[in-house]
Amino acid sequence: MNLFKLGDFILHSGQKSYWKIDCDALTTEDWVTLARIVYESVGKFRKAIGIPIGGLKLAKALKSYQFSNPEYPILIVDDVLTTGKSMERLRQEINDKCIGVVVFARGECPDWITPLFKVNFEELNDRIN
Image (cartoon, rainbow, N blue to C red; front, side):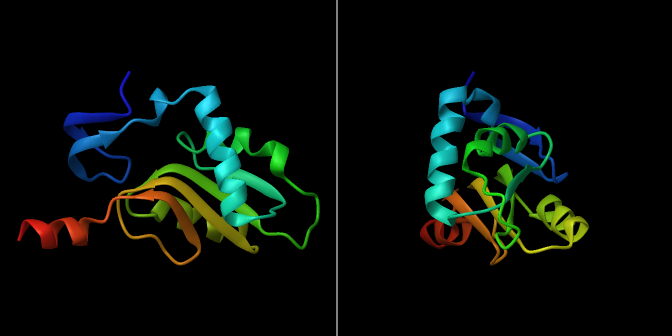
C-alpha cells in the first residue's frame, strides 16, 4: 500500500482529484510517532477527538498525551484536510475551546488548525505560471 497515489479520486470533501494521500498506508508506529510530533507542536490538551475515519488512529495514539485539566483545550485531529468542513462541524458541535491538527493539509487551514505537512498550491501554481 502506498501513502501517495495517482488516479481519479473523489475526496471526502466531494472534490475530484488526480492524486490522493492514503493514510491507511501508515503503520501503528507511524501513528505513534505522529502523535509525539503533534504533542510537541501544540502542547497540552485535555482530550483528543478524531474525525472519522481518518483521524481515529491519530486520536487513539494521542491518548497517552491527554491531561485531565478542564482548562486545557480539546484537540480535534484528522489525517488529511482538504476544505476543513469536517473539522469546523465538529468544533461547532463541541462548543468549547478547541484546537486542531491535521497530518496533511491539501488546502488552506483555518487559524485554529495546525498542519504537520502542507501542500502549498498557490506557491506551486506561481512556479508553473
